[in-house]
Length: 450
Ligand SMILES: Cc1cc2nc3c(=O)[nH]c(=O)nc-3n(C[C@H](O)[C@H](O)[C@H](O)COP(=O)(O)OP(=O)(O)OC[C@H]3O[C@@H](n4cnc5c(N)ncnc54)[C@H](O)[C@@H]3O)c2cc1C
Image 1 (cartoon, protein in one colour):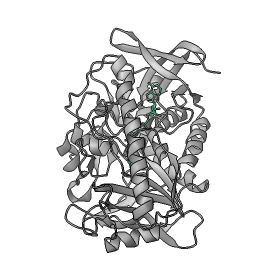
Image 2 (cartoon, protein in one colour; image 1 turned 90 degrees about the vertical axis):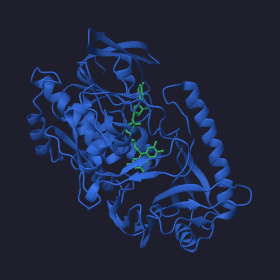
Image 3 (cartoon, protein in one colour; image 1 turned 45 degrees about the vertical axis):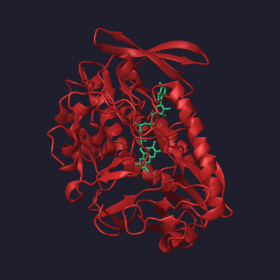
């Protein structure tokens, strides 16, 4: 039974929110996790691998709940663990930093996240849109909800904004980063019946697929779920133009089961994820993009002759609002891995910028292949109390956002912020007055890396 007052409310049950709720619940905080969809997972359920768990030197930078999630997914036959094997850089194929990915089944993910959250004694409320905040002065006291039961208000000592779009911070009047444009948006889709070995060979031979000799051809093989031998789990490159479609298409394909491929291959620019009409335009445009691409793949590209679309995601948003916090993480902070005394999370993936104009994706690599710290202050919206932000909307410039937004890093953020919220409530403090040393010690005790 949902209560009217909680210690901690986590708004949004996506990649960051699921981990934040577990962390708060495990500290004994009475915690509620609210989500507008019918399931947990948010963007993690679109069919993308975990990135940002390992750095370019092959060292693990995110542990704790991230690692538990991976192990649990493996137990449920929904993942194959961390897959290493490729090297990449902006200079050439198979040289430079180590590339590691952790592919997983996006449907089993929904179940595993749900069970992990319930085991932490967290209440879950699905099918519920958060439509406003309750605020006294600069203190957020609760949320206004809208769902099939009607309108409802639920109060909390700390609200964690894990909506990805910083909806709650916006309702509360938080300062947002001014930006001229955001990264492009994509619907991800699954094709079944793909022969990944023929696709890899086509890439090698330049047969309707290009990219060999450049960063995109990150070719990784491993044994897929229930498979007897190693085959390709990750292939990235370009589909070359064909007669009836003159454009080159950058793609990544990820596969955890034989014959089933998660494709990230279409993009739409100028989508504002905080505007319903713009989102509608994006959904329509992307469905058309996928139809055109799939027709071409089936006709021209080796390995796709007998493949069909078996699943599509909602429009995936790489970037929308960014909250200005007590500290704004800069690109040099991450690329030169500057150290912060209040670091509570480690990020590890290069800054991954999908061109707002629709061109090729750019990668900014971290110096020496290392990893960087995210200061606790990035999770505290400037001038507001009782509210924290976590996930892709945290306080970071656009270039820094290109790396803090990867799933491994976002789950680690969730663990840090959920723990902080609960510790603050337990000690009668606010998130801003919580001693960061206490938080760091607790995160280390949990097995997280700060
Ligand atoms: C197309 C695409 C490809 C990507 N590829 C990769 C990849 O290969 N590897 C990788 O590691 N990362 C990848 N990323 C990045 C990564 O997936 C995201 O940055 C990350 O998952 C964002 O996590 P989040 O918790 O901030 O947001 P989300 O996971 O999106 O969670 C936000 C949640 O809040 C809910 N919500 C939002 N507003 C409300 C509201 N008002 N009321 C109630 N609920 C609300 C949403 O429904 C959602 O469940 C990709 C992202 C995209 C879009």
